[in-house]
Length: 381
Image 1 (tube, rainbow, N blue to C red):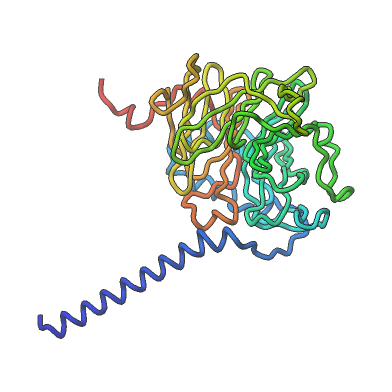
Image 2 (cartoon, one colour):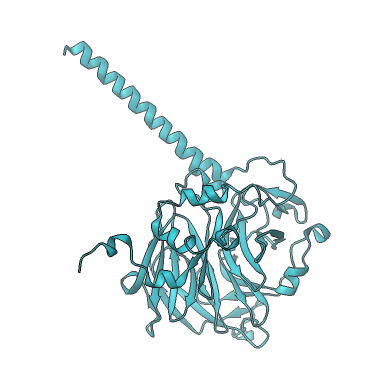
């Protein structure tokens, strides 16, 4: 091969490489930057549940290569409505308010699901506006019919990374962070059920706003044995869960000395637990603590830990761990079912996610507790 031909081939290779770099950069900019800062226009004037990103069949097909997830979520749920799944409302459009202009009605197309709670009658999903323009919301879905019932607009634009349900007092908690303080905010279920966007076009009236001493951020939460457990997400270092008691009315106990001159309520934790990095949700099941871990486009992890007197829930102490699709958020235990929420169906993340999950999945905890993977089953005695 002469020098002219070699030079020609080299120029072609360089040009192709440059084209590939430009294409990759363009995709990265579109999928990871543009979609995170931009809201597409919408013709909707109501919160949409249908169409979902996928049909049920399409969702099951997308997840069909996830052997463990399919076994836990779908195999024994043929008789349940939608195989036990709940379409996440508002991924295409959500009725809300403009935070910068108070009570001005608006449509948001960048709502990102975060928190999850299940009550006797509802599946509740919290979401925040990814572009920061609109009030955060809670979607109310009928537990039996799986139908979206209404949106509940929250004051301001908290990240609402966690929801927690106190069934004894009929109170729903959500996580918020204001002026660099971790906060837990509560809503009575009576207020939530009575809320009507069309009638008020105002945010819902909250029950209690309580700052949380001893934790950097209120990233996720759950309610268990008359205490509110609050966890802090950290990207690359161990973090903590703090436990706060509630009183006979279901309110967080304000234990700070009023003589300090503070004009807000603040609760002090009973104790702390240490957890591994990138935790997004927590739940209790029998004698175990469950933690969901995820960050970015890497696979999520769902980890079972045996309860420990040392309150040390880090990877080396895990009892069982599963790898699930990316961007798993909050988890919630009801009986033997584990409800799981993902944020990959949000507009900001849809283009950059390999596995898009646009539904709350319901997993079998007894199966997860005793499951052996195909690889494990093939190991000879």
